[in-house]
Length: 222
View 1 (cartoon, rainbow, N blue to C red):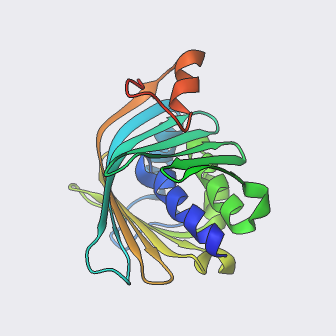
View 2: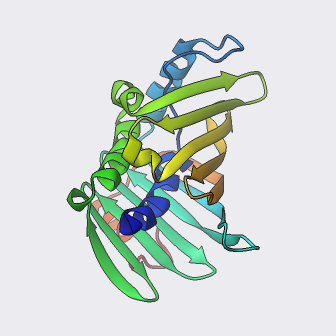
């Protein structure tokens, strides 16, 4: 479980930092479920994605938060990369059911087949980008609230095993843009991520794909 937790902490922000979607029912203010379905369809058809991120992770055992910045990439249907550039360099690359990790301590490969919890959560990420709202609903109890200024999406895992790691995920955005995300873990840790310079509808050639989805991307990764 400890290994699964460490991997999931790296994955969950990726699942939602670029897009949020889905709902079982409208929120108390009367938001129509159709609004969420339309948002999901737009997100699912957005193609390749690139965004800058700034993350603050607050651990219950530490007084000061851990701050990181870097770049996120998504290439449909099942490639994701998170490249941290500050304060140190590290990479997490997901290709279907294989995860590659690299930092100053070396490189590691994680097979999602070895962890039911990790496999379920990383699979949800692929479900979102493919626009499979039905499968997303099956995995989370979801509530959505929106007004003229912003929308808020809350997810609570249905699985007891997943709830043992993640208590809740909250997303805040405006229009089709996700502006902030908060992940609360069952042990009290909390992660807040903010996005900027979001680009969608991107396409890359094979050479660029090989560079982006590598644990050793060059500085000029497109």
